[in-house]
Image (cartoon, rainbow, N blue to C red; front, side, top):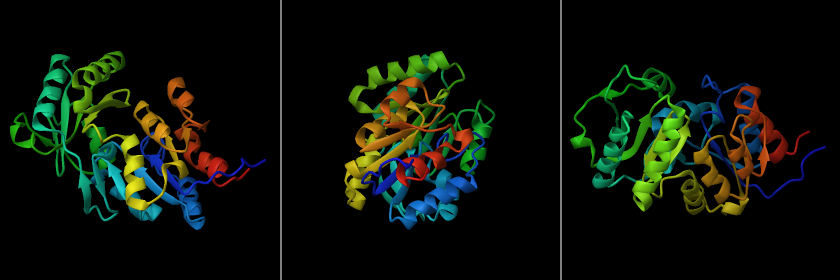
Length: 272
């Protein structure tokens, strides 16, 4: 039996672990689900910790027309990647963040409005990230010139317990200076305080005139909880932690089991 319909006029989806699979595949079923939304005049938008360039490959197959929210809302761009607005970290906050990550021996990547800077091009997750976003980083130890154009800093470590601790430390030490949250167990993203996925919901309301109460959000990580809270209804992916699931209205299957498409089909389109 179909789920009762809600007044959903916009669907906002996270990308990695939500819209695409673990191998970064956009499945035919996911594409069909997005096209079905359009047929019902429901806007589809995406948000990600990725830079806007790293979402470009999704524009054509999904026929995206809504703004793309890169860097968890740090940069809003049109589908042709032309800039709508950007939220940069103040230089002092960026430096403080880098110092805190260094104190915990967590390597830091810096994303400016145009570049991705890494301390070691052969470091953990760099090759994977390059494959994901489809452009290479620039290896450099000299970050001073970049500190006036920092849109996101990402701390990278495969020590999951350390990363949870570092995320908490950053949240405490940076306070209202920045937003810090895990985007993957091995990534902590630091952005402008208004550049978070909850902020994306409100920005889309301002840009598109769709009330937040008429939005449905879909995600799988702790940084997606802010958009769950800001939107009318929400769907957590099946592989999400219990805390993330508890924050959502509904839960769907995992990203490896067509969870995005199945969630849209059931909770938005009302299909059996």
